[in-house]
Structure formats: structure tokens, C-alpha cells
Image 1 (cartoon, rainbow, N blue to C red):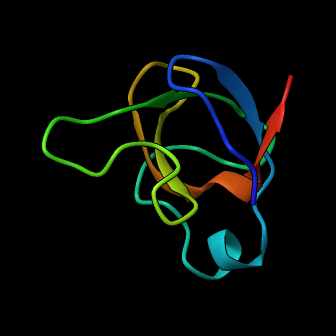
Image 2: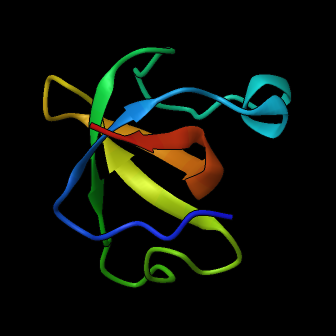
Length: 71
């Protein structure tokens, strides 16, 4: 399980769980995403998950931190 930092950019490379249960946002494999914390939601790295914004700045969804590779 990787630890990620809020505000940093990572390349989204989905692991099996994110392939079976894809995020609801507009991201796809290979996209550069930014880790964000959302108000009222658990912070990044809680239970190995985090929220991300896609390359266009729109909400990308909840993904596993293992799916994020450092740039």
C-alpha cells in the first residue's frame, strides 16, 4: 500500500480493485491525477484510498493509493 501526499500529481495505473470497481469520475489508465482532500470525507491514505482530480481539474473519484505511481 502506497502513501500519497495531498496536492501531488501521480500517474493513474489501476490495480485489480480499481479495474473491478472503477472510480465514478472521468479518469482512465495513464492519466496524471492530483490527490485532494474533500471536506467532510476521510483524508487521503485512510484505508489505502484517496480522492483525486483528473487531468482536466474535475473530480476523478475515489481510488486505491496502490493505483497511483509517482511521476
